[in-house]
Amino acid sequence: MSARSYTVAFEGVDAHPVEVQCAITPGMPAFAIVGLPDKAVSEARERIRAAMNALSIALPSKRITVNLSPADLPKEGSHFDLPIAIALLAALDIIPKEAAETTLALGELSLDGTLIPVTGALPAAMTAAREDRRLLCPAASGPEAAWVGATEVIAPQGLTEALRHFAGQNPIAPSQPGEVVQNGAQKDLRDVKSQYRAKRALEIAAAGRHHLLLIGTPGSGKSMLAARLPSILPPLTPEEALETSMIHSIAGLLDQGGISRTRPFREPHHTASMPAIVGGGRRAQPGEISLAHNGVLFMDEFPEFTRNVLETLRQPIETGRVLVSRANAHVSYPCKFSLVAAANPCRCGFMYDPAQACARVPICGKEYLDRISGPLMDRLDLRLEVPPVEFQDLDRPADGETSAVVAARVSRALDLQSKRFAGTEDLRTNADLQGKRLEEVATPDAEGRELLLLAAEKFNITARGYHRILRIARTIADLDESASVLGPHIAEALSYRIVRENA
Image (cartoon, rainbow, N blue to C red):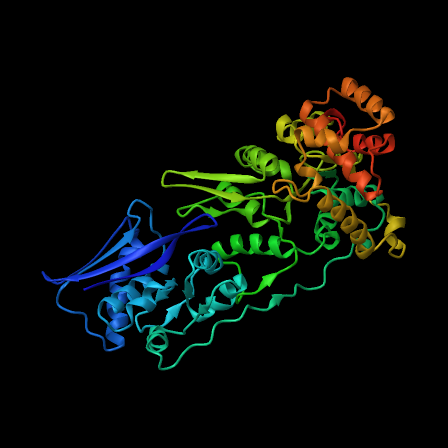
């Protein structure tokens, strides 16, 4: 007696199809699972045995062998419980074999047969759709998986309901997508008093997905500014929402199957480890930079992060992907985010205040910011000082533009970029521009070219810095709805590239 069912093995956000083969043959009673299973998968036989007993199903006194194919693909996680149970029930002729073979299943079994939700239902549903199979998953995972929309999602509470569904006794209605998560009211940019130049830099960063470094004394408003960046970003497109939700599904962060259209805002503490920031751990889980995909990564006290963490950011910032390499896994995650880094001018933060500064000024400031290496600093597109707010400004009523007004300009600029890059997968915003395409759309006029060459000679701007200035100028031109990059756009872009010694 033999039967088969299907499930997935996760490798990053990719869900690879796995065939679960079950054979019941004469021999000494045994229950073996082969095909490179980890400890959690190997223990599935005890959970399945107890669940079957709870359903009054007796396993035969024969040799039960379960093979997870392809055998050389590592199998990790408790979600293999349900597909193994389905293949075993089909081999016992308790459910139709055809039903088992046309179903992709995942879910953990409790000892009484109840199905426990697992991570990764969304990417599993996408694989089920590609394989032209229905998805069987726990009830709590159904609303999440149903967002794919291209496959039928059956989500029973337990193994008993699944058996009745396959037998046609009590069919389960397909799951419906979960509610769109409505995040609370976002913070308004108008709450930030004064700091007009910093607000402008925030607008440019939002309009082109540029990375931003804010340097200022404690209490100058750096964190307040960063927290308001999501309020001027447009909602996630359906494609972006699905991309982001797949990463959050793998990390187990989707609440009751709901998908948010608000862009992620992640703010890890400076004591976070490299696996927490970049990704890793036993199962090569996504880190903060991937959880911030299509959103904002705010790193306060930037120089206080360990040198290893900071240097590891260089490649993801450049490519928009991170490769998590471990002894047993090599997993690639997308990580196109807007980095907002905040730093004090020195360790104590009062370098610009003669009354509170230490005796080592200005050496202490240079040593402190030297923790940010030159190559990493070069990748931060916009760099500016955030001066302390005057007390008389704090006393005045809120002024300046609201987030809605700024968001409208940002949206128009992003729409221009969307039309410009239509038909190209790798280009979404000006931050992705490089090579010949950058030269085509961001070549400045004669005035701008002369200004840029003078600045490059005087400030020793690197080739990477030169290209980043062009990208920023292109974004400023888009905010002005200008078809060409003009001299004033280059001048403003140059003003945001602070020289290290003057920081």
